[in-house]
Image (cartoon, rainbow, N blue to C red):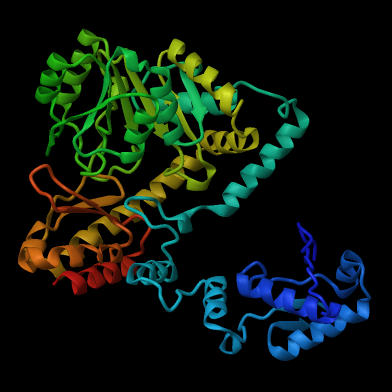
Length: 490
């Protein structure tokens, strides 16, 4: 077996201690600490002897002794491995806890929340989420073929030098076609910059904007990593009211009368966290205000593809008076979250400023990844994948809504969102029924709902809503999560 890294053992001998004893204790200690995990392949006896400068027979005797104690296991014609089941009963309490961590089990003093999170990993939800896609749906074979083709392409053309910080021409052309054909936009490749996920796009966009030109306005309930990015770039953040139709443009007008505004950040397609769509009349009014007052509109279109009921409302960047819109999108939720690909669309001057910032921190993205994704977009495989998973997510959304009604009846309320990967659930009646003295205790158990996030309305000091991500859960996992949730709150 080809091992990417050589396992090295550090020996620190105590006075009067033999090499045999020192090596035995060190390997056992490395196993206890989790450095050598269960199933880890140990170095061969000859290799380890050469590394440590000791006799090979000493290493063999140490391995044999640790096998007899249950620390190691020898597999004929394969090698020596750390045992899957370790002899923790003979260890001290401290070392038992270390072994437990190495095996991924909660320790004896582990909190209830940690045990619940562990159960979610067992269920198959690999990420604590409030609206992320299911990585189990990734078409790995399709992706691997695209990467193979991209690697061949880079070997035949001079791609491995420094390229355009705005991204490869191939991916920007694919994005241009998607945006123009599918999003009603009319952009050129010079107006597109590829970034490593939408969060990088948000950060760079606020980096280009000038805090000296005014505050940055966000919705009352907003995406906290975006707010943190704005504040880190020197902006004072002002909250604007929102309701069942999204951003309240009348309240925005009041803010404009009191503050100089540099930009407005919004998630109009499926508002984060409430999942509502910004109505068309408010979209047009927001853009009109942007043109009159000269502020930028940062449009975070993080899950445009997942719309189930009808044709999605066109993005702000495709509507009249959209000259000041900075459109930020992501390919992470569309295809493979781990690829970390997003894009920013704006006028060419703004895009060139973002490219300048990229050269200071990253120079450019991953050429192979960008070429592979461009290949998949051009072949139609991305669109095909979107159609497939959209049907799956719609079934999961409907199942989650049905189970909420079955399990909670009228004790919780929610509106079925037209799209997205999460439900916005009003749990205030449950907390009222539980009584104020017990509310804080109950709230501490909410991570059972698949790691969902709590939100507090302006009228309450306690959280009143929970955002439940159903995308990364199968139907049976959704049912289990909601039933466990009900056991804690009812």
